[in-house]
Picture 1 (cartoon, rainbow, N blue to C red):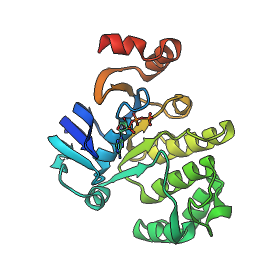
Picture 2 (cartoon, helix red, strand yellow; picture 1 turned 120 degrees about the horizontal axis):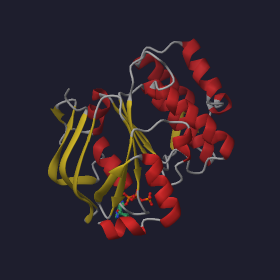
Picture 3 (cartoon, rainbow, N blue to C red; picture 1 turned 60 degrees about the vertical axis):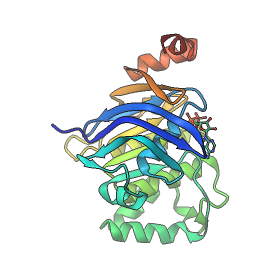
Length: 246
Ligand SMILES: Nc1ncnc2c1ncn2[C@@H]1O[C@H](COP(=O)(O)OP(=O)(O)OP(=O)(O)O)[C@@H](O)[C@H]1O
């Protein structure tokens, strides 16, 4: 079967800095992969490039999604094709309430009011909907708001940048279960979504069953393997071994 995502020899720069240096990567339908790597390795840049943020200039290489060349498509076209992203540090959107965005997304994606209620309850974010998006939200509240938006968009392929960053232990469980639900991994028969998740701590692996792990160093993928084994090795020895291997 054709891959859902295929990245071929991708070179990207941002503000003149080379952030990706020849990335080859592919994912099948329903795959869940995690990205590890030290600070500044290029993980977020990779996600931003897949989503099509204009700051991230593709200098060489190709990105194919569901067989279509999306390398030169803008964010909106990619979102329409089924790619969604949850930011590491989501921006505040002054003047737009979370409630307004919820109404827009649920209407566009045919989600009933009852279903919206259920999602708001499960993410414990009901009390925040009158506020501007992310305005003064705590770290955990921002992540829950991000996951809420993904649950209303239902993208086929989800990019999740550090879902546990700034989130307390209790809320990591809540966010983890919500992501699992979003990916359809908690159901026997349902369309399974694919996801690429950046994690430093690996807490998310306690909730989401990831198929593969990848290590990014200095703009390149240098290793792939079982995500739990990789995490244990990183916890024991950091990225020292990877640097030697590289
Ligand atoms: N807008 C920008 N202008 C200049 N340099 C940038 C910009 N965005 C990212 N970079 C640089 O690109 C490199 C890769 O950053 P990126 O955020 O992709 O790394 P990361 O692996 O996600 O790191 P972290 O784990 O710390 O989030 C870093 O050196 C960063 O400073």
